[in-house]
Every structure is written in structure tokens, then in C-alpha cells.
Length: 77
Image (cartoon, rainbow, N blue to C red):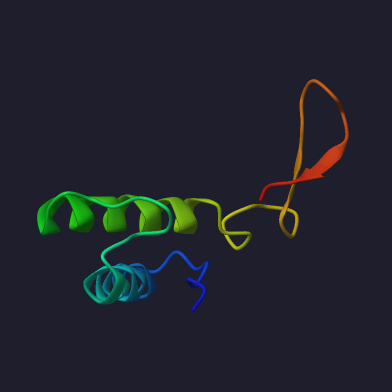
């Protein structure tokens, strides 16, 4: 199931729970295989926070940003 791309604490914790539960079922997080449960939890936190950081809801201008060097709008994700 894809992760939610929102920035609230509730959504981030839900994403972490989803990643950890998939690790328990398959033993993998994406393509990687963490060696311990603790490392898998740390990786799940990093993935969830990164997903929230890339959220279009966080960007101004409806998900596009004005680049300073190119002077054109480009999508964030």
C-alpha cells in the first residue's frame, strides 16, 4: 500500500507502522534487508519523514517552486 504524503504527526506515525508491519511480514523494507528490528525501525522513520518532506502540501504555489537559477516553475516531487 502506498504511503500517505501528508505532513501531520498522525500520518507520519501511520506510515511508520505500515512500513514496520510490512518488514515483519516480508523481512524487507523496499529492496533492503535490515539486519535487526531496531535498524528496520530507524529506516522506517527515515522513509516516513522523507515522504512527508517531499509532500506537495508543504510546497507553496500548489506544489511547484520557482527556481532561482532557471527562473521557471518545476515540480518538487
